Amino acid sequence: MEGARAMTENEFLWNRAPNPVPYPTALAEMEAQARGIRAGTRPERVWLLEHPPTYTAGTSARDSDLFNPRGYPTYPAGRGGQWTYHGPGQRVAYAMLDLTRPHGMAPPRDLRAYVHTLEEWIIRTLRHFGVEGERRADRIGVWVVDPATGREEKVAAIGVRVSRWVSWHGIAINVAPDLGDFGGIVPCGISEYGVTSLKKLGRDVSMDEIDAALAATWPECFGPIPGVRA
Image 1 (cartoon, rainbow, N blue to C red):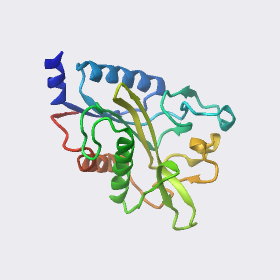
Image 2 (cartoon, helix red, strand yellow):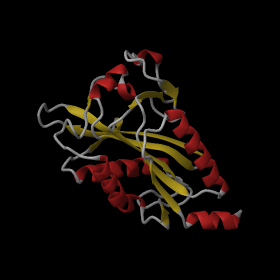
Image 3 (cartoon, rainbow, N blue to C red):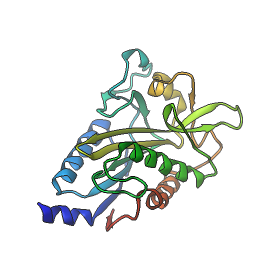
Image 4 (cartoon, rainbow, N blue to C red):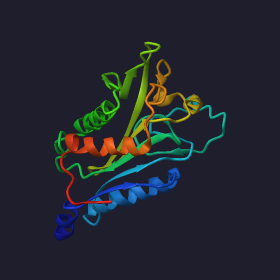
């Protein structure tokens, strides 16, 4: 087993799904990948994808925060947090990493630092498109101030699960989703702030462009990628 683990430490999967992935399919694949990482039989992985319109419930989700007027599928996610929307036009990046090892800005076995590094990855990615994302001490995710309205809105969400120090789930950046779909929930349990997207902020960004920026900023935050396989 030690030989298998050493082999997978020198590999890294960076995948992009060509078509929307149903949420239960993604959940099963992430869980299998996480088990393999723990066992030393699968390498770490970043998986870029979109989901069909879906609402997912974190471990703190309240039934009263789900309205769902369009009748989209709802699923328990197993991650932390509350209700989240996923759908076309949103770039989801799932990170399955062995957190017993250091990853750039994130030292081993430090969940707070890992979440902070995910936030930094988003912030540096947004800068490629002239958008300044910001952290907030009292709420997770990445936030922007809409220059047209002066209103503070969330542009990217973070949801993490760590099982025996292997991470799964990850981030979601609103590139050009239907923002009306966020009205089917109280996003992340926060009703006093809105949700925005790069499109709403006046940035016409393709998924290819956002993916290129994510790939460019990953090594800055998480360190060099060993032996990448697509």
